[in-house]
Length: 340
Image 1 (tube, helix red, strand yellow):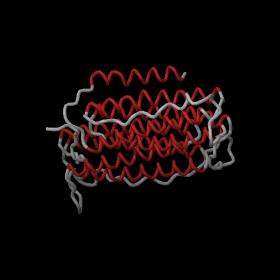
Image 2 (image 1 turned 180 degrees about the horizontal axis):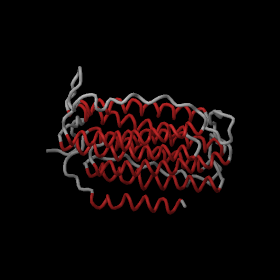
Image 3 (image 1 turned 60 degrees about the vertical axis):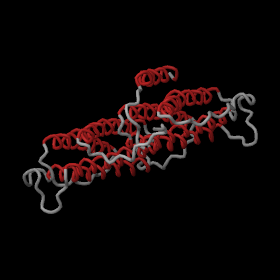
Image 4 (image 1 turned 90 degrees about the horizontal axis):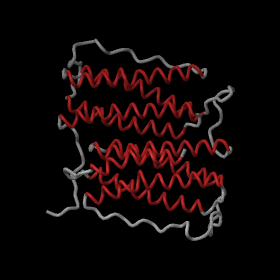
């Protein structure tokens, strides 16, 4: 299973390697996230090898080896290559620790297998939150694709570790929220409630933005966000909470049709402002989905939130495309290490 997963990751990353031709310098935000993605991968490499030297558990070793291979293929190799293409010197890779002895005989600090699993899950949560910020900060399509490959590979590895932790009963999960079998835990209920509230705010904002513009192309994109992203996700969350025995709040009143497009009573927003506000809102939403995902224990909740994330990224890319065509992006300054 792990081998197939990493083969698929390689197939996604390698075609990009062949066609990655820099047409213009990247902006400083893109360079920052590339650098942080590379260095966090190098740190993860050292950490996981240290864990390998602290356990002789065969099943855990298989997952640890998979994490190292995945970090190298989807995180370290692409970032090293792309930074070099931009003219930057990359830091050296740390020396391997697995040549310093035999598995399970780590020196100085000894971790038990349960601690290794919990530490890896915690590290994965941190990396996922970093990765989604990188997706949201990137305007270059080819670079964003690399970050997307990284985050969905990390999501798979997080799922494997979570399943192992549940099976071994080593997770410190929140208490059950109800007396039902396989109940949502307190953390899952809290994060779903936050997701529900965020959809209500999105409905209000999107309908307000639609009322603020007469631009047919922008109205089309805004309605896609409302009808294809926000409302379907809201219904999924409402249905899930109701199935678990919780009451859900009433939806906000509709504001569509209260006046002709482009007319509101007080503050008028420009089309570029609407686009930039929408991008910022989706960056927050993607981060929120990942934060919610890292709190989820039940597989169906994890799958629901990953689905939300995929839909959000797809819509985000539509808005980025529109923003690029309108020169509406406020990117950080362009940077390059090249002279001249």
